[in-house]
Each structure stands twice: as structure tokens, then as C-alpha cells.
Length: 184
Image (cartoon, rainbow, N blue to C red; front, side, top):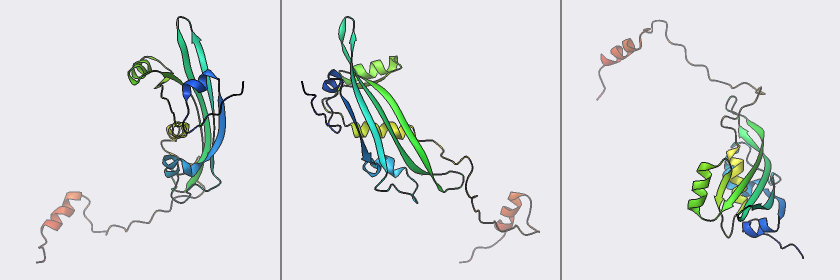
């Protein structure tokens, strides 16, 4: 029997799991708009930047119940993020690996997700795998990207030095301003 072709943009997860389907490929990083927007403004994704991914379906038999529908997803890419120390672009490798248990109905998914350590999603007739991959890569973005050692220090404009006779107390400066008259 020939394995049926599956579309990653409209994946029938139940059939994919039942056939122990496997898909893999890559998408242009720019096609994942939310992830591409996280790139440093000076280093937007190039046409050659790719997101590599693979998905494996699994149907697990459960004693006394229907088979469980599982989807195992792996994805990786590299995005140039803005270093929060030197404000320069820096390449950051992103890798996500997650397994999802699919159950019928949103209510069941919410209930099981709260009780289980597994990631539980509602089974739909058509899953956009590209959106799921993008969500997982967004979740692994570093909160504060920064170089271990910045290639060049941040150039800070020197502040004008305070006059020598400036008051040391901040409210003294306000008192001096209070005495001035406003021009009409």
C-alpha cells in the first residue's frame, strides 16, 4: 500500500499519526513572519535563510481506550537578534523539539493540559504545521539576547558636565527655577 501524501500546511493529524507519517523540509525564514520580525533591524532575514523542520506522527495504543494521536516536531534555524549590550546584530541558533498529544475537543484538551506534563492540543481536521513550528521557535527565543563578549563596546555620548556651582540637592535646582518669571 502506497503511503498517502500529506500537506504540512493542512495536515490531517489523525491520519498522519495512524500511518506513522513522516514529513521534513525547510521553509524560507521570511515566510514565518512573526519570527522574521524578531530579527535585528540591521540584519533582516535573507532569501537564503531557512527554517529546517521535521514531523513524525504516532498512534499509541492505550489499554481499554482509543489509540492516542501524537505528533513529534523538531525545527531549527538561525536568526540575527539585537544584542542588548552593544545593540549590534548577533546570530542566534534556535532549536525546538516538542511532542503533542491530540485529543478530541477544546474542553478535553484544556482539562488534560492542566493535569498533564505533556503538551495537549485539540484534534482538528487541518493543522497548519508551519504555524506550529513558528510558535515553537518563538518560544525558544532568548528573553535577553546578548553576546558572551561583545565585539565592540557600546558608544555612549558623553553627558555635558554639570557646572561647578550647580546645587548638589535636586530640589535646590527646582527652587532656582521657581524664582524665574515666564516670558509672555
